[in-house]
Length: 158
Image 1 (tube, rainbow, N blue to C red):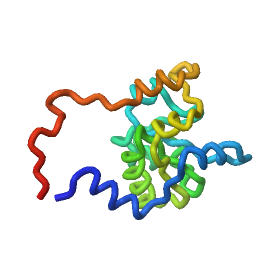
Image 2: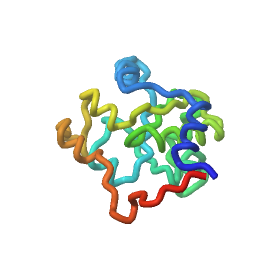
Image 3: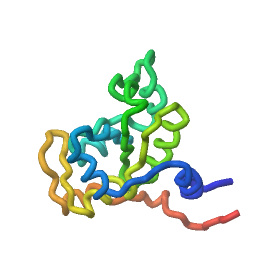
């Protein structure tokens, strides 16, 4: 049985990843990539890279295809366009990028370190109203918050 991180590490070997500074450079080009943020809507609203499209991972497959209630036409048309998949830390985006490859996307990559790494590199983030989010405020918004029952008490590694 694999853990979440073992699954991510396995899939990571099959996809392309870029760092925040690489994406920053790509966004300055005449034909920038489509930015696909697969976080949940609340996470996306709090702090995101300007211009990104929010499609939560839970509806990704149907959002990528025409003919579904969740279809996102811009995403469904982007099979041959560069697409950078984004999440908080770069783990969910690895899994989403792999899924998109399986669906026939030919230029999909994951943002290594995610929005958190983007913020650590002190690149701009915006909120739901497109107001800039200060780097320190974003640090707080992007910090993982575990409930007491989510902490690992007795680790079992089989």
